Amino acid sequence: MLTELSISGLGVIDRAVAEFSPGLSVLTGETGAGKTMVVTGLRLLTGSRADASRVRKGADRAFVEGRFVLADVAGGDREAAAAVVDEIDGETDDDGSVIASRRVSQDGRSRGYLAGRSVPVGTLGRFCSPLLAVHGQNDQLRLLQPEKQRDAVDTYGGTGTEKALKKYRSVYAEWKAAEKDLARRNASAREMAQEADMLRMGLGEIEDLDPQPGEDADLDTQIRRLTDSEELRLAASSAHTALTEGDEAASVPAIGSQLDQLSMALRATEDPELISLSEQMAEAVVTLSDVGNELGGFLSQLDVDADSLENALARRHALKGLTRKYGEDIDGVLAWADSVRSKLDGLDTSDEAMNALKGEVKRLREEIVAAGRELTAARKKAATKLAKAVSGELAELSMGGAKLEVRVEPASSGPEIGGVVPTEMGLDSVRMLLSGAAGAVPLEKGASGGELSRVMLALEVVLAGNTSGGTLVFDEVDAGVGGKAALSIGKRLAMLAENHQVLAVTHLAQVAAFADTHLVVRKSSGASSIISGVEAVEGEERVRELARMLAGMDDSDSGLAHAKDLLDKAQADSR
Image (cartoon, rainbow, N blue to C red; front, side, top):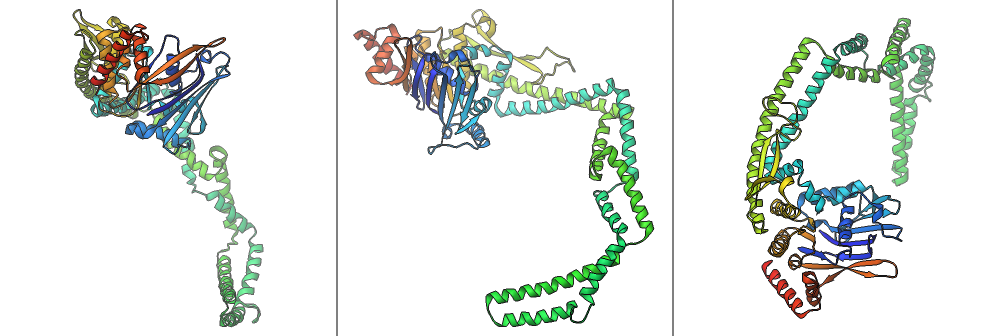
């Protein structure tokens, strides 16, 4: 939930702070006061493009800061936002809130800040997007796009549509990859065959020598020993004789006996430090004995055979031939061989391989048609329910008997397979139509701005009915309506606010009267510019603002009485 928004240097707003509560908050004010700048600030937090012209004249930068409490957001969105904070190793305040901010300079450069860290704007957007959904005139226009209409159906379909779409897209990706592979092999069969021959030649050279991991390093050690065998034998033999035979007084057994006596004498003192030293003496005897044994083993394995040296040198020369061509060392050569074996699978243009790939493509085509039809069935089921639910909402929004019709039709753009046209998102397209006395008309052809606003609101109410948390922002969703329809919009916003935090920018008192929190953007003329700020109004001040919105009669007793009556009725209806 958004609990606080601070704006400075943005448009007509010099500096303003607004506090938000759960439920429905409305933002009102005279034209030009800066209501749009509040929405612009929220859009900046969600990562939208920064416009340097929005920076207030005379200010060196615009700055927007929002405080969010994640505990009040629904599970999936909360986890997505929290994951971004964890990703940047961000910090939360003592109350569990997270601060997100955006700075835009006069030259258009922009920077984001999140949880005490400087972050790219994209990261800021990834955090705020699950928490903030801004609906304005541009968003209503996006509703006219077929893909947005399809997304609405898929969202309403829930887990059933989600699983069907996930299955379809997985098969679709496999099918496209297999078709691309088949086309590549058909187009480049000769080149691929030549490349495969060269790779097989190199692989055969490696397999003939059959090098083992680390063999080159082992051979280097062996060759050094064989080359210097006499020197090594002399050094090892001298040391072995001194430790195991030698003079009676200098041999390991004699020295060990003396050390044992000294160790026993030290232990007899019962002094902890001397006892520790006695243990070190005992360990020294064991170490010398082990060294003597290992020297004996080394001497027994030391090979002085001239043939062994010649064989080792020949093997090392052969391995160097591989490392010159295929890797820095033998391990690199073996890695190259493994990669070649995998690559050869993709270069096989034999009749057997091509027929197998064609069979795979055919199988995937059949799978994609089956998965697509499952998805179409799920969408049609969801579309019927969505149309009925939205039509019910439209009736409440005084749409004059208009109903929403949602059609799931076969896709027509693309290559046809088995009588259908597979696309990345399914075998079909979705169209929303508004039906009335004149028949069903596509939204993009027959809906006015006010009707689009109400369709958007109705969709939002329906789609968000089973979720909670998050902040929904509506920028003049009541544009082009008035009277009873405005009251209906206010009531639906209040209903939506039962499960969400809702912020609505409005010119209509009929909508503002339903709010739990009423914020007013006020402007005042300075010496050389207009300065705006945001303040909460309650009681008589709120009634006065509603009277101004109704007919500019904030100083009239009848206007104030009308506003008071509207407020009382709206608050009673929203409970």
